[in-house]
View: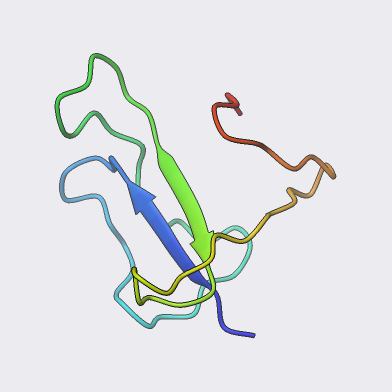
Length: 75
């Protein structure tokens, strides 16, 4: 299954990947930043089943420590 990863609020000019590029654990994707109208650096992280925003379903993720974050968690 193909997964679509969306990261928002990255540091300006820090993105190290291009659309469609395969990534692996440990790859540097970009740096957490403070873009937009926010008071501190933070990251929006979402995994979806398709890039079609009106058809997508957000997928649950599990980190290597076994934890699955839920909306609003700080990780």
